[in-house]
Each structure stands twice: as structure tokens, then as C-alpha cells.
Length: 111
Image: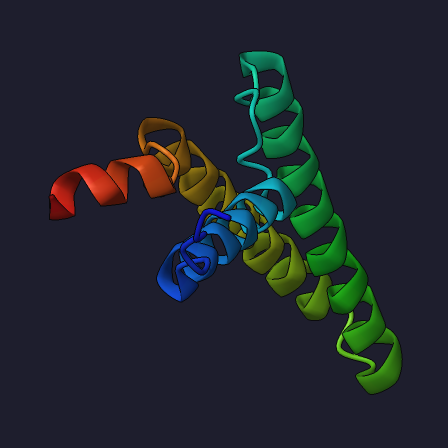
């Protein structure tokens, strides 16, 4: 009978970590395929419109509750627009970044 070496607990741990990283990247949207330019454009547009709509809605709600018409709407338009631009700026900054290093890249740097 041949003796088999017991499985290395560190190797099993490494495999579990690698699997967890892949799952996390998949959940964050950094899956196997990168998001294309059309997807990024739709994301930026949706974030701009959503932030603007929320600002306008909150401004109208503020005006309704406190009777400050039209100042709440004006403030909401500006704040919503600023939030939308900030969101678009952050999304554009993410375009130039590469996804977090995968497990293969980490191992190569340590060796």
C-alpha cells in the first residue's frame, strides 16, 4: 500500500479564498466580461436622471410641507444636479481602473 500525504490545509484555505474572491468580484460587477461602453453610458445616464429626480422630488416635498414655494424646488434642482454630476464623475473614474487583483496575480508577487 502506498502512503498518501494528507491534504495541505493551507492549500485548501487558498482555494477557499480564491473562490470567495471570484464570488465577490462577480457580485460587484467585475465578472469575467468587462462592462462595455454602452453599459457604462446607460449607467451614467440612469444615475444622472435618478439623482436629479430625487432632488426635485425632495424639493417639491419640502415646499409642500413648509410652504416655501419655489425655494425648495430650486434648491432640489441644484442639489440633485450636483449629486448626479458627482455620481457620473465617480463612474467615469472607475472606467480607468482595473479590477482588483485576482488570486493568480497575488501569488506571483509573493513568490
